[in-house]
Amino acid sequence: MERAFSLVDYLVVFGYLAGIIYLGSRFYERGGTVRTFLLAGRNVAWIPAAISAIAGQFSAISYLGAPAFVVQHDLRMMMFAFTFLLILPVILKVFLPFFSRLNIYTAYEYLEKRFDYRVRGVTSLLFLILRGGYVAIVIYAPSWPSPRWSASPCPRRS
Image 1 (cartoon, rainbow, N blue to C red):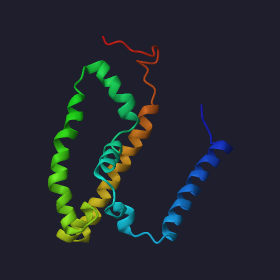
Image 2 (image 1 turned 120 degrees about the vertical axis):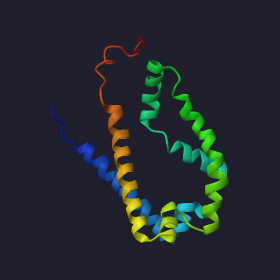
Image 3 (image 1 turned 60 degrees about the vertical axis):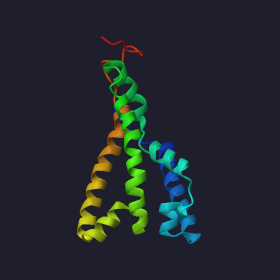
Image 4 (image 1 turned 60 degrees about the horizontal axis):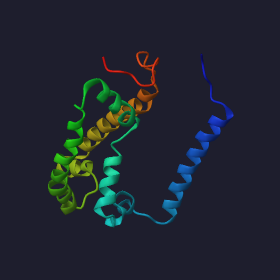
């Protein structure tokens, strides 16, 4: 069964793109700087910044796949929750002060200062490839039907 975009689908996509262009142009008209865009002028409290950073790591796979994994394999997924607690102090005490002292915005900017623009370019490209693959999986995986679980809304562990 082949599906094609309907008029409503096209309207949603083009409306979304128009909204992004509008918001971007409004930011540009306000005279925003890179510092304002990337760092919010360094005026954000740590709690909203931490919530945003953690929320950015969750996806539909987290909400659909993690409970399914727990049903099948017990609570082995809990170690991932604890890694946040272990790594956050390292980030807050080591990495953030380091980048703040150097007055740089990204790790890629540091790589350019430490090495050269080619290293920054290669690492940026690798990040974009990996992140693009991740986003593709995050979008596609939750929509993939599971034949094993299609018969029952609440699968039982065997």
